[in-house]
Length: 545
Image (cartoon, rainbow, N blue to C red; front, side, top):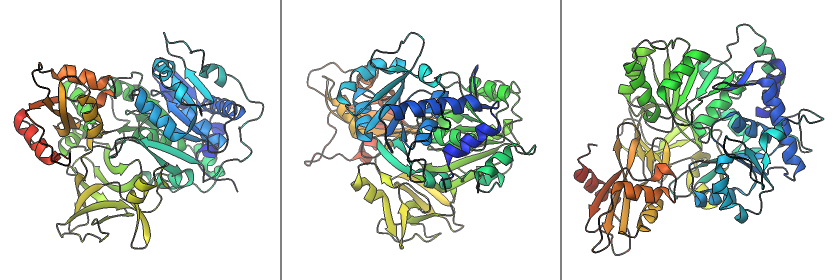
């Protein structure tokens, strides 16, 4: 019996409602029929050009229908799709594509100049496919995405000889505490189950049991097809999994027209398209959203919004209260999750029932353990590492050491422990403390300090540098550089050092604060006290915890 997951459920949705919108981005409307045809054509092209079972297909794309079509094509063909952070510089990109063993890369043509610097070092890539942007023609070493997807394969749906299986995979590349991105290996069967199995617990919808059931529910007049807006980039798990969920329920994935987030644009699209669900990443999104509503009360009809969900970054109690004043009928869901661990906890807020910041109801498959594997007793005041069991990834691609550290057997069962610390209250709820490492989370992006430090130290005026995260009301944390200068040099400005970092790394890794010191205070073994350095930076800049 064929697996029940994304490829054949989405095909069933397309067959039942070919004219219903699958993806909308501004004026672009891709129907379910078009969505399915494009994915078939792309899948056929990849198979024709030598990709085989499990071959990796990287989506190096801004938000757009092509991102979701690329993943859909991979699902159909039994290939492994992987996300790519489009903010990465050349060396970060090379690392990711090389680590993933990428055999095809689908990219926006505006990235061609960056790819030109690394593609000769990626001999495994058989197919470079460019989504054309105005002013950026398809390079001579790539092929046009639109030309590929305009062709209708002779046989549909496209299936490789090996068909589709629960063992097919999806990689979610995520920044982590080791500095370089890690490929989280999700079996599609596990991911399907972990995300509801085609149902929706919040709406009381049980998992699907058959393809026929998927088709039948779409013909039911009472079935509500969601219009889910992914405010965050699809290159991150929050945006991607949310968009995939809307499609699985036979709804529409709504993407913002602009590449730079605009809260006024978001609310205008919510009103125009009667969006029912919005996916965000904490205060980096919800802060501007509330500011826009407060500045323009009553401007938008938001009565269609039933749910705003956030994952990947802290969402404050005060912000939730503000949003609920404007949308008293909405539910705000703060999910405690990561790319490798779904369902660690959740916090649900409604008008008159707002939850506190960092307090989560523990998930049914979650627990908190000490570092030596002892379960934390509720109300003990003891802190521990949050773990989640049940359906989870196989581990990190080509990193057995990190896999063994994160995925552990405790109490006779396998758990995922991404590294988040919490205490357990007497009522069983969690108070989240944060990561136990020095990893910085800025607006949902994880930044490894040593990577930025090395970039800073390549500046001619910098002798040594330490990078810490300081509190930020919108992004959770902002990056601060604590630098020791070379003798007799002019002190560089924050703007100069930030530009220097941006020349090598993604923009979000650049410092937004600067403290100049006589010495960073490294110990004889070369290590630095990050806690003391952070306190030093807080005192210097006058920031409040």
